[in-house]
Image (cartoon, rainbow, N blue to C red; front, side, top):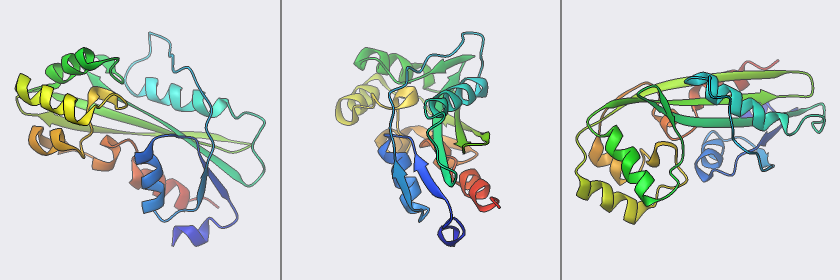
Length: 194
């Protein structure tokens, strides 16, 4: 459906995330992957979606001047926002434990921004999903970290993994967004292209 509509465009996903790549396959889209190393540093005064909007756009700026007329570059960034603080990817097992302990028995927000860049225009959209965890025992947290090694995930967890099945009691908003891509909004944006 959308694939036919986008035939005149070339979609470029600038993400090494296997989950994001799978989402694009599952949306039945033709795309290519182009990667650039970006230092993900943001100004300290930014809050919540300001951070992910900034980082998604920063990733797109790395391709400035390289896009052909029919190309649409897609970049994105996800953070966990909890107690007025951005939780990114854990540095090590202890950091992962501390992050999960702080999310235990509490509600946090998962924020993903997606940047669509052409050679003439840049558009950023974002989605916020609220996720509530029940009380996670130290044993459960250690089990999860040892067996699933969530070091490439914002907030030190993947909702589609064991911890999501046993720990998440409530989700308000997009489930796909918690996995790193608000697929409904991406579909809607692409579907509304001229």
